[in-house]
Amino acid sequence: MRLLGLGEAPACSLSTSAASFVKRPVFDGPMPPKRPASEFAIFVKTNMAALPAELNIREKMQRLGQMWKSCSETDKESYRVQCMKLKEEYEQKLGQFMDDLGPKKEEYVQQLSAYKHKKQDFRKAVRDKRKGIQGTNMSGYTLYLQDNFAASLDAHGGGRENVPIVMKELAGRWKELDENTKLGYKTRATTINSERKAKNETLVEKTVKVDSASKEKVSSKTSDTKKAASRKTKESSPTAKKAAVTDKHTK
Image (cartoon, rainbow, N blue to C red; front, side, top):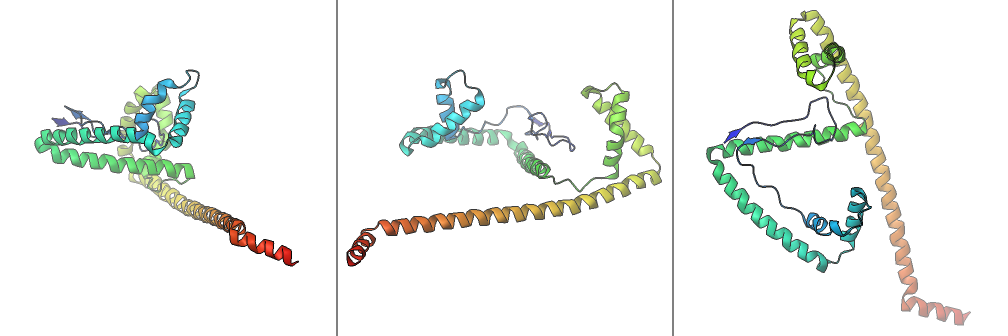
């Protein structure tokens, strides 16, 4: 079995679409078994067809989510049993798959570990982008690509099929640049990284303050709710009612 390596999203792309997401290791041979479905996934597969046809997929999933939450533990038990059975079958198939790898087992484990780390880094980059946080590892070469990529691609007629040609061409041009020009790009990149780092620290500080304020607000609201519930419980207790009646008669 020959390992073909990892595919990953371009460094400049933070889209969460499947096309740009970090891909699992690809093998020239039998693929590892798929992970078993969860209890909820089994529930969805079982009940999806019973929903009205006029609902779109999003509405159907919302409806199924509500149905799942309203299910009793007894109703969920059958799905748990199916899930456990699938997990047992998966563990057996995975064990057999690992045994069949032979000397390639260690390489497979290393590539799978690398894939998981890349996926975590990718998701962190997506979260950071949504918060406005920018990367601080820009190089002079990256900045050179940003300055020249669009014009070079247009010169080749545009189109995704010409991207590899343009990247190869720009890499060759970068190598031919004199050291002073390269130093100019590297200096600009260092400045941009410093500015982004300062901006990121400000954004993180604001995020922490907002999260802290939000937690304090929720905590205060929860505390007030508990106090009100406790007061209501005391007022409704037999002892409190008896005391109120006695006080009324005394007056």
